[in-house]
Amino acid sequence: MWKLEQPKSLSPSLIQQLIIKVVGLGFKRNNPNTVVIKKSTHLALRLGQLGSNLLSPFHTPPCPFYIPSYGQITCLMSQFCLNFKRTMISFLWLILLTHIRWVNTADLANVSTSQVLNIFILAGQSNMSGRGGVINHGQNGLANETWDGVIPPECQSNSNILRLNAGLTWVEAQEPLHQDIDLGKVCGVGPGMSFANSVLKRDPSIGVIGLVPCAIGGTNISEWARGGSLYNHMIRRTEAALQGGGQLQALLWYQGESDTETLEDAKLYRFRLKRLFKNVLRDLQSPTLPVIQVALASSIGSYMEQVRKAQLSINLPNVRTVDAKGLPVGMDYVHITTLAQVQLGQMLADTFLQTHQTTQAVLLPVQTETVTSNAPRCCSNFVLDLLLSPFR
Image (cartoon, rainbow, N blue to C red):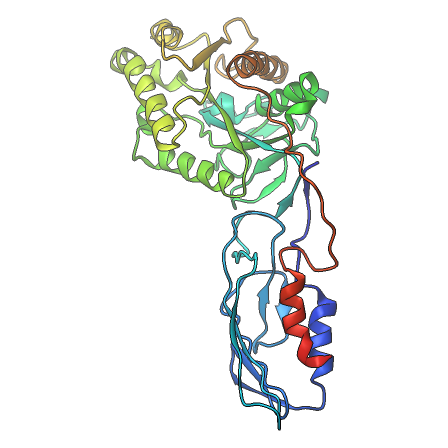
């Protein structure tokens, strides 16, 4: 099961052994990145600039580092020289190849799992961002909005549902999902949590769900054009979500209210929407990625029916449409209610599961043989023996 945890660090006991073994021998710091132990044993550790929660005792000022328990495998070239007095002169330079990945503290949080992370993009405008439970207390056309804070049972947090926050860190998802993404707006309940909970309830074997909120309220389809800030933001967030591993499962798209105001936008909507979907699939290198869009539920907009017709007529092979018409809307006649968001999330889940079951097998954990070791994760006993042998 996926769970959030602190980064797996180099064993403090191992570092302590290294320090204890050289007590009394004396040492000096040549520079902030190198410690040279004097007398019989010389140990030079070049650590470089790292990022972690564990501070290296060999740095002034202390420099943090850690070894993740997953992810891409790269190489750290740790250079050390062992010199034994009266027996031999400096005789060994070795490049240690260890399973280590250095990251910055602003990168994705470390998540360990034996299951696949199933990633879903949530994009569009305000009804995807979520306005369920948002109340406008303003008068004379002035906005004074607050969220009532009501979270239905279908939208409650679940340890198997994660959310990529604005800092590109996986955290446990909770409403409002877009609170740090759709800035300058009051966000409430959207379809994302209802969708995720419904998918897990109907198919627990699917594993862990990772939601990537990208929706921005009040946006026109032309603002999502390839190369624009909204499009680039969505692509960057999705690529960041995939860095730690996982499978991109679908794009959930709900947008179009802002394109119902002029005839020109309504006429161009179908062309712009198809182009958007094609660009996303190409740029994410996922030509068969399911796209599940929502046909508008709103009842206002001079060209509402033209936009809905455009949405319902999209004929791309991997695009499915969920029709939200008939779902209850709020007092503004634009944003669907909290209960409607719950229902919409379940409708999206139905469509995804139907598509998922017909296009690919459900992703299951890979069964591998487990071999136990006393060494820290990502570091072999061979490496530990080399490091500690001079002190034994």
